[in-house]
Length: 458
Ligand code: GAP
Image (cartoon, rainbow, N blue to C red; front, side, top):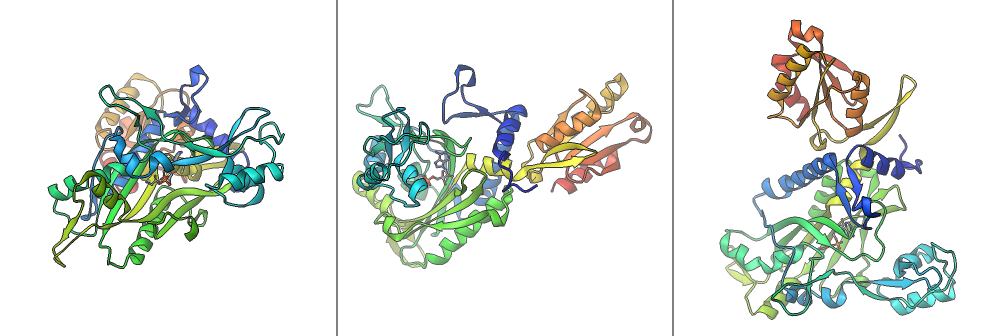
């Protein structure tokens, strides 16, 4: 299926996501709450499998990376010191005619190709002089572009002033640095990983689950010797990020790198590169990011807290504030990439078959166990088979509707194997195993089924 030429692809994915329990609009029965969503019963499994894959690749299988799970509510000083309180802004502009609000930089970039992020004066001039039209009412009558802080404010009973829901997971890693170094034997270079919710008051949320107000991040702070050659490590991290994108289904040709222009980098950053994916809406957009943040975070928190945030390097007998490389991943963008990459339509016997070709390790259900009919002795023995397999694999038992309809249902949720127990199974102690991708059917002895599935699911 040619995804580039399928303008309706996103509509089909949004519709399948709702119909088959992957993704629902948040608070839908009350008209929806924009920028929020619920993962449905299969979506939550898919998300969990993506997160587990990430954790296994970047934490459990590496000796140089440990994990933490910090709180969503963090001391307000953290956001002041990190610059978020004053600088975590997007430029917003309102249409005076229809009262809709937009990201000024997005309007200007779409109309002129110029990236003027942060330059409100110039964006206001262009919007007004070039009479850029409102995407909603098509008129051109704009307010001035102005900064809008994207952090969500909240309160705590015994704290004076504003508290914020964290806008990124990374912050807790820096303020727990001393605890981590003191409690673990870590040799530089080493990393600290964290996954969890982040909240951003996006001016315009949208493109399904691409830009949300509540989402999950998977981030690593990778601490390095300031005198070490960082370029090769930076390149290695980019390769690992691209590798992970392909493990969740992205094709190499749908990925590219975008290096942020030097002039736009913060003074402390040596380099920032986004790994972009070719989404069906508007082409290449950020999937992951990688930034060299120098020692900005640790030095700033050290100064503000009077705590030494350093590490001791046994090899060189040096004590120093390390520099940091920050590979960051958005979980919902991963979920979206895996839905887009998996979606396939094909003609089978004059009918359209929709099949989600998820990488097998990500599939929400690995094996569907289906009795050919609801007749009592078949159901009973099929259930026994289901009970014996469900400890080992994510299984689903289904006896509703015809076998053909059940196969199609499992195709739509991307189940790699359907196991059918029929009348012959009572005699020959074998079942029919159907492969999602080839639709080939094989007769397998029940006694060999677990090994067969283990081998094929990998
Ligand atoms: N600590 C660095 C950081 O937060 P970022 O580029 O702002 O960097 C990291 O965010 C990743 O989080 C992005 O690459 C993207 O995958 C995801 N992300 C950011 N904003 C998002 C949003 N509003 N909705 C969904 N995912 C988002």
